Amino acid sequence: MNPYELSTGQIEDLVRTHGTPLYLVSRRQIRENFARLDAGLPAAKIYYAMKANPHAGILAALKAAGAGFDVASKGEIQAAISAGADPQADLIFADTVKDPKHIAYAHGVGLDDFTFDNLSEITQIARHAPGTKAHLRLAVDNHGSVAHLSDKFGAPPSAAVDLLCAARDHGLVPRGISFHVGSQCLDDQRWTEALTATRQVFDAATKAGLNLATVDIGGGFPVRYDNEAVDLERTCGVITANFHRLFGQDIELVAEPGRAIVGDAMILVTKVISESRRRGPDGQEHDWLYFDDGTYGSFLEVLLYQAHYPLRTNTDGPMNDYVLAGPTCDSIDVFSRDPQGRVTTRPLPEMHLDDLLIAGSMGAYTYAEATNFNGFEPPKFFYLD
Ligand SMILES: Cc1ncc(COP(=O)(O)O)c(C=O)c1O
Image 1 (tube, rainbow, N blue to C red):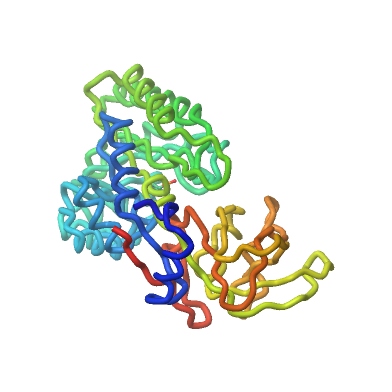
Image 2 (cartoon, protein in one colour):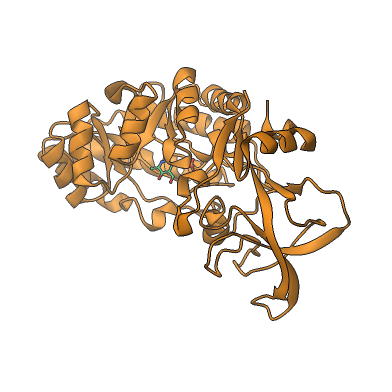
């Protein structure tokens, strides 16, 4: 069952039993999303980027569907192993900034595939996981995506061959190139350009005597939150055609999608716990609603990236404009924001104490980023199927 198919009455029943805040998760939707990417990228092995949502039930569903996992820490490795993953066959340590203790732990359990983008990272991998496979992450153009990951990660193409040679000279096995076009990438052209840049590095590496075997296209596959023109089949088709054009049949393809696997498979139900009429940062009086979840819980991406989740309510009164706020004692805990990040209102059917707000496409980077600031716990999970 897709969580969007739930009626208001069904949601109210679930809230009566399980309380709020509550995540409602569709394993079927997760399996369908995985299958769509798997079919659209037939050459690729898919490693779910579990940073998007590491809840145990989600990992177990994906393990059963045949996914591997892209991990970023010892904690994620342990969660993946608990879900049944084999560290050597199913895991890649694709983060380029790794705690050396976590590298040593990964090596100890048999994980043998690491990503790097600078010399110190090569040094750390060679020290704590000697002889393992290493992928170089390239910095690529991230325009057209929401989170620009190349602002922090990836080596410039001009440094690529020297770094790959340094990995080899440190006793590692330079295995291939990875990149990330940025999270929620809405421009397919970014993958085409990144694959072209990767081909150039492959050619230069061959001239330097290296034998690369893998292209890792990272994540970035988008989810529909609003009216975005998302067409995963088209995006996968563009990637597959360009991959075969540039690399033929003999190079391995790897993908690390996170958001596109879980984003639309989960909704959040949060309750009005207080309301007031007060002046906002814009100097105007507004109706404010305070919920039992907020910026320090599921809505951090509203603050970070102006995420605009689809909202509905269990009420059907006249429309009103509300400032939507979370429960913590920080004034930044407001999750109705405009594209510039300023506090604004959102139009909703009239709501009061105990009414329910239902936020859609809440699967990715919500629970995963929730804190327990002020002692508020993250929402509970309920699996619908
Ligand atoms: C190394 C790496 N791989 C994959 C992902 C997943 O990206 P997305 O959720 O956009 O698919 C991320 C996200 O930060 C990442 O850092």
